[in-house]
Length: 79
Image 1 (tube, rainbow, N blue to C red):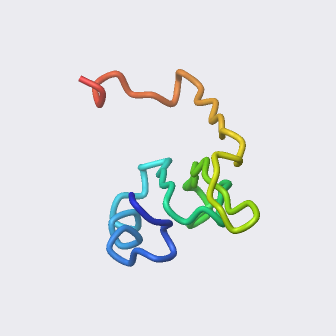
Image 2 (spheres, rainbow, N blue to C red):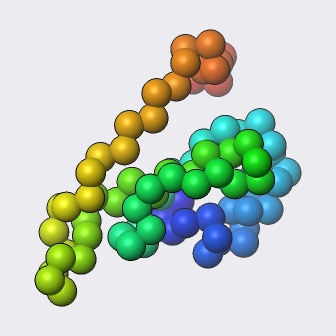
């Protein structure tokens, strides 16, 4: 999504209706860089690399690495 889950009610409804979706990613709200748990079982990642440093945006946030065990990936869903 463009923005974080807490700012997107349609995305929240979609995830509640589809509880097997384990991850979502965004990158718009630079100050909220990091990851959160949503609804107890969903990982939401804000992977924005830009940060406000001395009132200028620069690529200062560290990258986020999400290690996903291969057993969690459905090959059928990727075809």
